[in-house]
Length: 270
Image 1 (cartoon, rainbow, N blue to C red):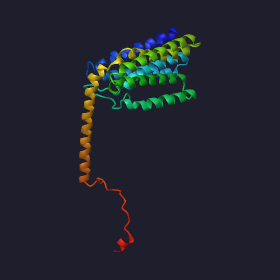
Image 2: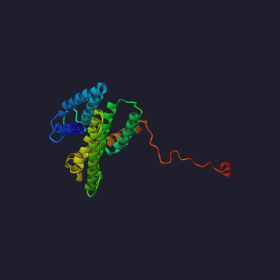
Image 3: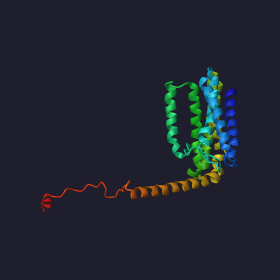
Image 4: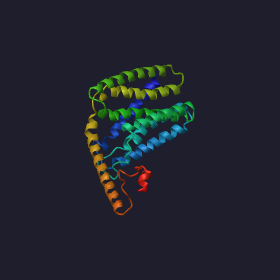
């Protein structure tokens, strides 16, 4: 039981470190900070993931996989798509996996992981990595979108339900860890306990009202995205007009492709 609790608390410490180290990306911007931060994250993640795949002792491999997922999320889910105000590279990727539509891939990921685990198509440490990464992704999907999707009246209601469910889940995991016969099972319980404790913390506090971070930073970012999209539309219109003028493109009319009925025999005779 103690092992599971320590693992969960260590995960929360990693989360706190990632939050603090990401402050210079947007809240207190430092130019080109992302050019240094991303390689460091990638190096740590690469080391942990490699050890998870090569470590012979399974319980130890689980820990490597767990921490690889914790470092993998800020690398793949945060820093890659997070825009910064200025620098040589202001955004590494325009693909934001935390957008609401990402639920489709999260659901598919859970189903695929279930099949891979049940059929033993992958090693257990890799399954642990995917489980924690998908768990964080599921967590982040709600955290990223609830401010704009959930009504003010429903926010505390949903948050309370999440808190109660996560607290019960935490108690079950602690009990399971206490009864677990192997170190490997205790380790897995600790990894899952990290997720439930995170839900208790967020549900009992931040998720009861809109995020101030969302109001301060996401609004201006969406306006910038709208400006960029308008510029792309204007370029598209100019390109189409230029191609029409050169005879490379023909605008289809509303009547195009409409079949006409054949004329009657007496009309053909006329």
